[in-house]
Length: 65
Image (cartoon, rainbow, N blue to C red; front, side, top):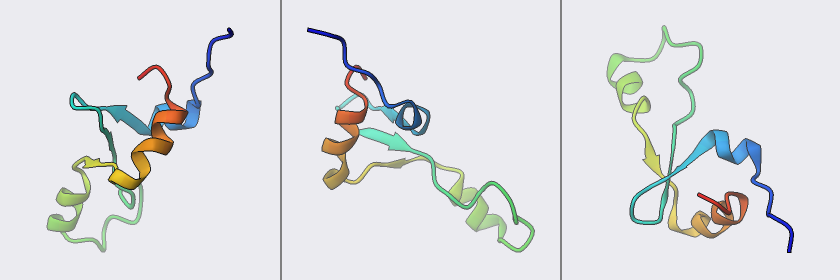
């Protein structure tokens, strides 16, 4: 049985969490930051959990995480 390949795009975007879920970064923080408030930028800098509906799909993309 051959090894499964990890989807490299997903590997750069998602990290496994201790209880079996995955975390991700939020979008809209790479450019055009001058018009965004400090509060908005601070909150966008935090990580979020992947939605429960998407965990199954992410687990297929990252078989060894």
